[in-house]
Amino acid sequence: MLTGKVPRVSVVLPVRHAAGTVARAIASIRAQTFPDWELIAVDDGSSDGTREILRALARDEPRLTLIEQDHAGVAAAANAGAAAARGEFIARMDADDVSHPERLAAQVAFLDAVENRGVGVAGCLVEFGGDRAAAEGYARHVDWVNSLVTPDEIALHRFVEAPLANPSVMFRRELVARHGGYRDGEFPEDYELWLRWLDAGVRMAKVPRVLLTWHDAPTRLTRTDARYDPEAFFRVKAPWIANEVRRLGAGRFCDPTSTTQRANERVTAPPCVWIWGAGRPARKRAAHLLAHGVSIAGYIDVDAKKTGRGLGGTGLPIIAPEALPPPGDIFVLGYVARRGVREDVRARLRARGYQEGRDFLMCA
Image (cartoon, rainbow, N blue to C red; front, side, top):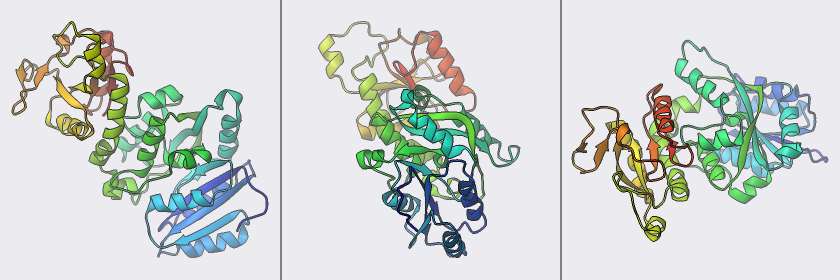
């Protein structure tokens, strides 16, 4: 139910079929050291007893408001919660995760700090709540997410994967009105939001402390929903990569052997990139860029069997890393996703003087 006092923090909790975990999640909010919050739980058409649990909890907790709706999806549920939020800040929470007691206090203090007034979204480090041996790949993803803390790190690596754990974030409520909330579509709704907001200039950072346990349940949408398939991630980030290429790389040389070009040609040339990775998976992922006005000049590959010839059916060249021109002539997108290869590509480009965020970006 709504109380008369307007809280500083509105915790938005979309819920569907979470009878086994939702009480634990809500208990973690009730245990917060920061008391000035409201919790808006949006039941998205549950039929497993979740709604009855939420009704009972709402009767016992005046700061808990329950919104009941027919099943419309997690984006619609999150937006319904955000629309009902009254707080200065909105904190996201999922029904299978656990917020540590000082989470809200630490994130409010972070966003209140004078030096962070320009930060719109504050995440935190997360503890992996699964079996690291059984889910090694997901555990490595959590480690990677935790490695990105500052606004520059988050912005620079946003095209690799989602740089924030969605249930760990707190953001200024005004951002929803300014840039829009979650969108529903054949894509991960949280990643699309971060990409859209980052493209609009929203700065994102993290409290460098573990403040949430991110559980890896077998029913998690990232494991069961096609919108979280790897190809969905490549599709959704393509338009935002194209925007960044226009800002950073439009008009650079498409011919790596060129050494001169008139200034007006450099300004008016269409966005053009070189793709690191000539294998079928990399080419398939990079092809999403074509629909957004980015042309591909050629490919870079370390495999000597591929280099020195045109790519079959396209006529596009494949060059070895050693054939790269000096930095400033071309713009490179790294699309090789194999474990450890991203680091090798980055190291090779840096060794030739290329600067990440100016001359190249990693996209897989």
